[in-house]
Structure formats: C-alpha cells, structure tokens
Length: 161
Image (tube, rainbow, N blue to C red; front, side, top):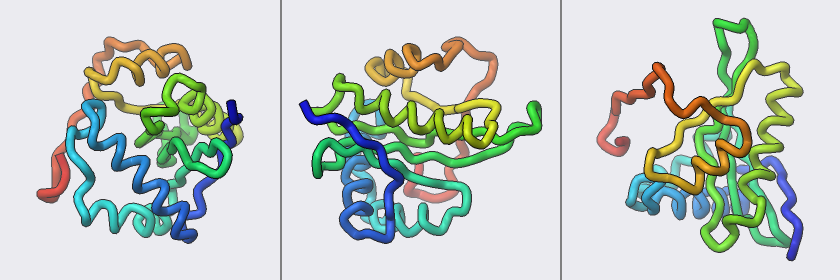
C-alpha cells in the first residue's frame, strides 16, 4: 500500500484548493458532519477565505498523486497558559482511505507544528455520533470525554448551523 505524505496545502493552486473543498464536502455530507453537502457559497469561499485568514492553515494527506485527507487548523491563544493553542477545525479522510493511518498521520503533523510553537494544547470538536473519529482522537490522547466545558454556537448567517 502507498505511504501517506502530509503537506501544507497551497491554496493558490487550483487543484489543491479543489481537493480540499472536495474532501471537506465529502465529510460534511456524512453523519459526523452536517448530513448535507456544503453550500455553493461555502465551497467558493473556502480556499480564498483560508488563504486570507492569518491564523489558519490546511494540510493535505497524499497517497501517491491523490489527496485523500485534510486537516484545517486555526491558531489561538490560551490565556490560562500564556501560550499558543491549536484548534483542529476539520479533520477529514475520504471513506475508502479510512482505517489506514491517514487521520493519525494528519494529527501527528498537526501536533508537530503545535509543539514547534510551544503550544499548550490541541483542541477539536467531534460530533457525538462520529464513533470512528472519537476512537481515533481517544487513541491519539484527546480527552477527557466528559467535560464541564460546553461548546456552543450562535449562527450569524443562514448558511451555518
């Protein structure tokens, strides 16, 4: 089987931008996402928006010449530690490549980058029904799974849940 190579996405490259959008859209369509495709507006805005965001980056996982997974991350700051933090906003692997170490390889690169900047923590959110992702995250050291901290949202537009 082909090994997995992780590289930062060059979102000015139309092929890499399209690959990121397709991987995230595939994830969005599933139960762990939003059970619906990305809107045309979100698809069009993703790559330019990430390119313009000063604290965001995207990684693509490659198996040969095919992009098979992605991680979209956003740098933050932990006031409690006085150090950077890194949020894994999206982690997605195409269904036919799940269970082959692609998600783990993406998380390892995310952690490497966080440690290189002396980050205090990695954060992420996962849908309660996404058992495969929860198993991966637990094996990777995320937890505890019961937390007094709640993650809540307030949509500001009609296109967000």
